[in-house]
Length: 178
Image: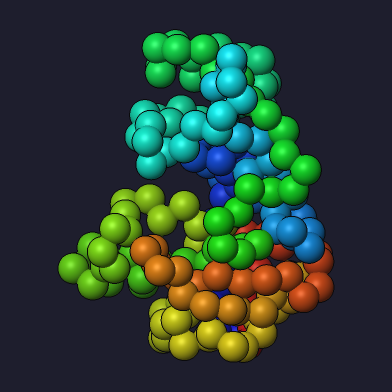
């Protein structure tokens, strides 16, 4: 065991705040329910992103797409809706892993340009007392029933990205094994 799962987060709507869950099912494309919807302009269907609309981070999805769309429309001052996607709207990989220690390093100034140490938007927060997850690139980790292959470090964020080798369930407190 090299680490343990400190928390698990699912982001039901891309660019919105996430929610912590005690257990998650890791599917080939990522955590079930993660980034399953995106925000789009009500009239054009054009996607609304946090890069152009930072207010999205202020809203946490409730799971009620109509209520969430109303709240977002109020916050943004224009009509938007949620659009379901055929697959999760991930930017780089199925699962994003970050350690508490990486967040601590970032808080001390060791943070990539353009990255937020306050909200790394990771799916799995790890407690990794004697290491650095960046050294896992090219290796496979087992968490609960799932097996993940660590592919790379994010360009502008903390932690590492991983692809799913074997789907399965993960739980807060699970051991992480290389």
